[in-house]
Length: 268
Image (tube, rainbow, N blue to C red; front, side):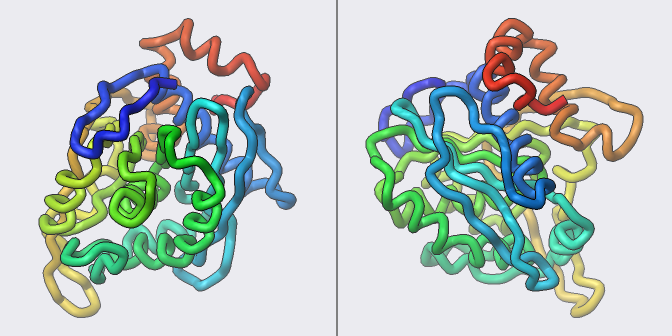
């Protein structure tokens, strides 16, 4: 993976090999969630530093991701929507104050509640790891929203001041004030977005709560990487394997190399 200087304001160049690797890591968050025992595959040269749980909309605690580490880098990966309950959280689009950082605006309540329920576990894991290695933060779908919420927190409140963020099919997370603060604080965020994927278009730019009738405003954070593929269905245009296949088609030798070890760990 590409090395990083700890310069908070200097964006790191987009690297499709890194994107493929992190998309594959994202795939294992779904494997972790689906397996009753939480087992999943760890890529060669990496080891598991820790796992974390979160509480979704029904307050049920479940696995939401893990932290991997190696001599070269640390990876914090968030799971996307693995159940109908998570999708309810996606569409509870009222906003709440982003509490980890002062004057950072408002963020989606459903996403924020999940992140805050995982936050202390994530901080505890990262405190045990060297901060002089690059920290990559990644997630697909709901996981991309959680990765975004985490990146501003970690950049502002920990020694990992220059996280490198790659998200796939992520929804909007916060209001204009949050986005301004995020864009000024997080140096590198690459946001992969299929133009035929409905999820990155949610919540809408102007959202009115059907319950309270209050109006909320949403923007995307920086770093859009526009992709364009159709997979024959709304779900097909969004699922992680579709994003991985799209990127692999552009970087096939890299994809084959990344997927070689351990066998079967890339999303298909």
